[in-house]
Amino acid sequence: LVMAEAQGFSGASIIDNGPSSDKVDVVFLGDGYTSGELPQYHADVQQFTDALFAEPPFAHYKGFFNVYRVDVASSQSGTDDHCAGTFVETALDTGFFSTGTDCRLLWTWSSEKIWNAAAAAPAADTVIVIVNTLKYGGAAQYGGYGVFYRGSSGQEVMLHEFGHSFGLLAD
Image (cartoon, rainbow, N blue to C red; front, side, top):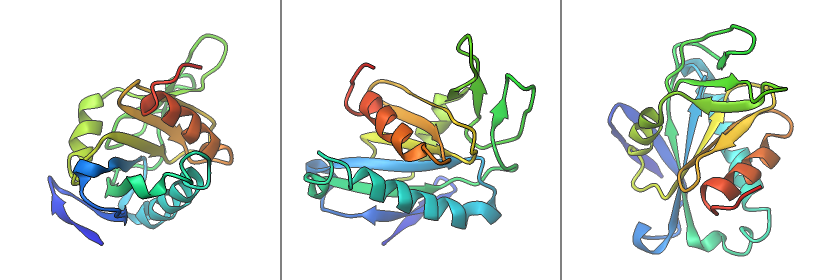
């Protein structure tokens, strides 16, 4: 199913299990994917959706979820790295920040941009932001959204951040 274009964004329904009033609505957004990289973003969303619903307890409760993908194209590929002094122009203003001894905090300067993009989906109980970088990192806003990288451990980071953003769990 393809979502109607709204607020300048298009996207698709990845899992449709019924009316939003009866389901948990998960919205995927991407940052740092150029329009030419959107096919990679689509593949990433499918891979991360499959990983989420392969993991207990989500595997058992998959029927209680709807999943949407909103296509967000950035002018440049990648994300900011404040620790290395590298800056790129992305739609959702994500970037790496230092937390003291490392530079693994991957976050956004603009919650407003996250929620504006997510509003293009039919509903959003929680938002998952995949950042187009292979550098390890992530973070989450309790009761809101999680931001993480698309690299080799990205699926585990997504599950961890989803626990914070959706499940309101502490570390």
